[in-house]
Image (cartoon, rainbow, N blue to C red; front, side, top):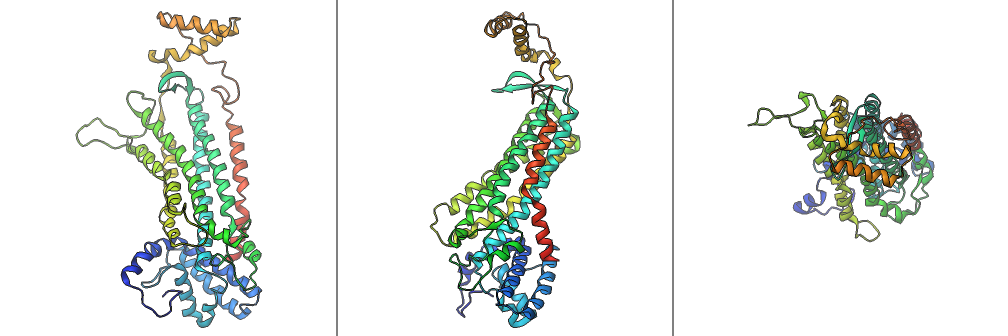
Length: 444
């Protein structure tokens, strides 16, 4: 079945190529297509294109279909082109001509725009909750190890004292900024494209404001041409936000790989979280972090892939846009699995204590000594030169205390409570509850 069928058979090779992976990927969109059809049907009734009797027949069928899709039972049958065709076919089988009315005022163009936005909206909510879980674990580890020092590096050379409190806490605060970015993408996602039809509106008296309210959108994509142009742009912006989270995870994974090596020896994972070598019996490899790094680096390429597919298209709809599904839809599952695994790995990570007592790290305390002499009355430049000369002559004897690190965000004043407040504020800014309330009301 094809919604555009006019009785002319399509060449099988052409049909297979043009459908591509749509039937497989559309299963992810099925609950959202059904919810959109429900809201659209309610609106059609309000503007006189469906009768009350029609609506009362449609809604129970759509609710059953939605439940089936949520439970993984929805299928796109052989010979059916996409999720939109399957939903209409099922309604028509059960309700006859009433099922044929639900496409009034819609095109598959604005249907898939809507489906992708509802899918992305749901995905953003899941990603945000997962990021909160990782954030909480990082903050707990930061608080627990705020007094455990480790060397900080610049240029991969020993630089100044750091701490596990700073290290864990740094990645926690990085996630806050990642969610600021994700919230910006959310603002773009949470605008209703339904009613744009093929990209040029419709002569039916549609009430686009009603479907906006029913589906819990913040606002409309008003201009129907821009609504269609938003396809590809929306996916790219969301993918950029996901890639920001992936970048944070990748960098943490890289640190962990370095810190687990024998040359550093700062952290380790339980044996059950490592793998061995086929010929070297002593090996305990950090494969989990290496694969996290690789998967996250792959996620960071998704915005570029979407840009390359859609970047040189003029206004209007083009089939090129179909291919964005192949990189966009799997990105959510990929990033969620990476966040989940990182959360587990960080919670199980064991840290080494008294690292800075090792002789190789004694010069990390040179700045501490310079600052002590400045506080005793010496100019900074003279103190710097004096300590530098002692180091050159091999006469430098470090004082390994870091009691003066008291300013905001330093070793002795991590400001984790303030960072936690920032996280609470950014999460509250999404206003997920309003969206969830609207969807619950629509679907129940």
